[in-house]
Length: 299
Image (cartoon, rainbow, N blue to C red; front, top):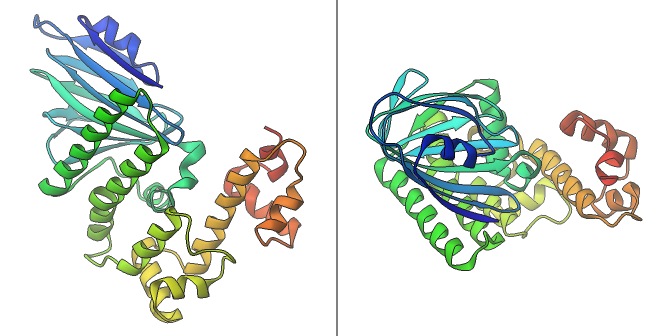
């Protein structure tokens, strides 16, 4: 779904951003007016917002996903001045506390929680972020501009086509990985960024290379031995190749359960993915997703 609006008062804007629990307050006589463009896809939503005037923003971010905001103007965000080159991060339902003066422009992308397993690198990044909470980070000017330029091109295509396609979603995610996640992970991992790991993730995103969920398959893609690949995974993603495959296969199972016809059985779907110990699978699945595979299938 794609929506585009122009608004001429702050009450109209508050009504339009339904995914956000926002309470906006104008603190000057300057007129507040602007535009809102939003495209909702299968795995994510993308939006751009502009408005004039001076506004206090309070409330909560969308509860159904992880949101990344790219302000193109200065903003006092959680009592800190943020602006160009900054990426503001909102966990599901996290606090909104911001002040904008003399207008505001921002690009916002939300990755849906129920589809987060479709983005392996993002899922790992968020998992690590949960262990050491962060609010914002800074990337280079060139990478920041490149990603925002990609979102602008996508929004133009969405406007022309009237839909955010899976091709557009993949384009956004690949750009997000290249210009945002890779750069931040590189800084967090002391400048070491494994090209072998990203080569593996790229093939996975394209649906290639992993058939039996064995570490040997990853070694073949990366053209590296077991010890070298173990080091790269630990340094880049903070987990072993074996652990990565475990959660990747669970995400494949979840996707298959969510899209399976009603008459299919959990065991049949699990067997297709190489699971033989159904009891252990149920434990691993529950600890990861908070429900049994049968509950997912019955939706």
